[in-house]
Image (tube, rainbow over all chains, first blue to last red; front, top):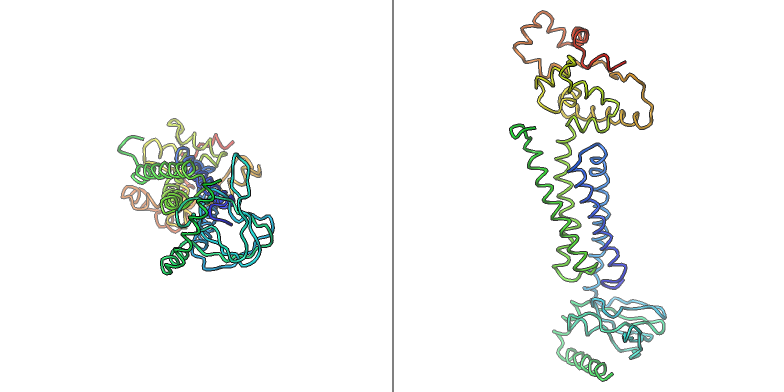
Length: 181
Length: 205
């Protein structure tokens, strides 16, 4: 699950809807206290809060683990989306085997702009610029990639100036290619 | 209820709860509209946690205190114990002459009249009353009750004596048999149910 993936968004929205139901039950109890409104407020509301907190906690822990991941290997099946253009960036990917397609949206259509293979990396631009993903990445074949969380990626760059230079050069080249299109 | 009879827990508790509810709804709506399920950075997470976790916990905690307070009201009892409505009406009728009506009309019991007379002293009194009350609600909704409704157990003297037992006037007027009343040998209702029944007898028919 990518940071701010559709599932993550749905879980957070569902948790907020549950919280609104709790507030509505509390308001109903406050305005019109009867056995029924008290029963709903004192029994159903705590259950809804517990469910909402589990949803929230799950997404929070997932976000934390993603942004602090240290070369955790992930496998993507052909056609599987690694992340989408516009998503919040939380990690960079280093391809161990397989290939991915880089797609950019133009006029509502996705246009392939690059194919990346073994030894290459992607997803670094949004971590450096703290910007949303500028392209969608889809696995072209069965791909195995090492995932490096944002915090660790930035620490790595600050500790290794040569690597930082290489990454910045790569980001610059890609930006120029994108501008040329 | 005039300003001198407001219960402070209810008065301030309900206002505090209202503020928490409004703040919670505002935070959740702001988060839904502003972030639309996205959460990146401390501010969106802070708003989310406050609206979905912290404030709802505070609302249920404050609400529980208020619930315990409001669950003692006559209106609250009558909202579930629907077969008791004629008894509540009788209590509020100053012409009834029943014990309940006399206590109500003369403000011998200022408020929460059902709770005061039908709940024994202490925490377990409340627990017992709620346990019996739940059974009554079940009987009402399953239509398994029989009219006229009657007390399940003989009315305990302790429920009268928790107020009257230390009254100098009562001790003087009941001096001859107070020991029997305290021991339960003699029921209060043995004498009082004849001329002044707890609730008007006419309603029981």
